[in-house]
Length: 258
Length: 208
Image (cartoon, rainbow over all chains, first blue to last red; front, side, top):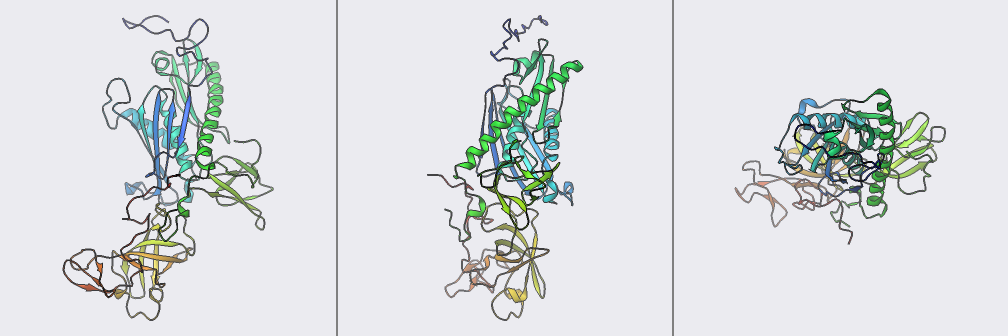
């Protein structure tokens, strides 16, 4: 480490091997997931992950807009990832940018490989991810939120999709980067796992790693994903196991809601 | 992925939960087979059909799927000599649309009890109809014959105002005074929750 220009780089890993926020290299930030906080959406989830706060809503399967994207043999998955203007330190210019378009694309493609889209031809499953507060790892937090929201919406899929980023910071492979580690670290490797099969459906990398480091990072990421998977499942159980939720079909045709 | 299969008696399964092996069960609705194992694809309760040796998952918050006997809201698209063609907008029990906005038909013999001379006196294009599904596959056939079923909202053919029910059960236009004839539902003008145009409500009632 050292300083680049005049800007002071924080010490990312201390002498005791602890990270900038006191975590061990293989430790996740605290994560809390609420399934179904939104009532208008067909399915929804809120994820608080370290200093990230992400809301996801799912609609569908419903009519495809724009129409020309419609496919006669299967449903399509459309995703819109958006960061709120107030989600980062300096005001983010609202609207589409290259980064959010890319993230929307990779998230939609990740879900396309787990949703049973052939069951609903000529329709679209629409995922909206709103990042309310960002602190590195928002694409993973968004993916986790969207995945819980899809399950909440009753959309058939292979499995839930836990996701986490692994990175290289001060020469060490660490799990779940926070903002400083992401900004001043050497590499960032977000991934999403299908726990049922062990397949990865999202894998990106920024920065550099050696081949053995990449192997170590992938192993660490899979372990992290499995931990997040447990939190996701618990969030859905908390919402549905209590029997407090009434499925749409339980409303009587006479129009009397129980 | 759980390593232990979930017994069918046990409450809730989530997508990706192991339900059993392919030797034990055929995957039914809401389940799938992968590499000789059967997993859940939906969040819900597992259900075993001993006759078919099939395991399925009954979703707790399912995407609407039409079945015989369901009540649906549908919009009249076209009236032909022997049948009316409608687009199904939602099932009456749910505030979620039926995926794919499927088309259904009401045959002239199923529009009302008794003989019908012409469908033009029973429906108008654009009317919102509450109907029952007589057949869900391969094509959707509907009926509006029972008194509770029929048109629940219609617009005046000349001035497009919403038609109102008059004192003697006739439909009249409050704006231009025209009268029109429809096979109206008992609950004309009242929409159940979840009906298109009905006041929005939450799919989850307050637990209090």
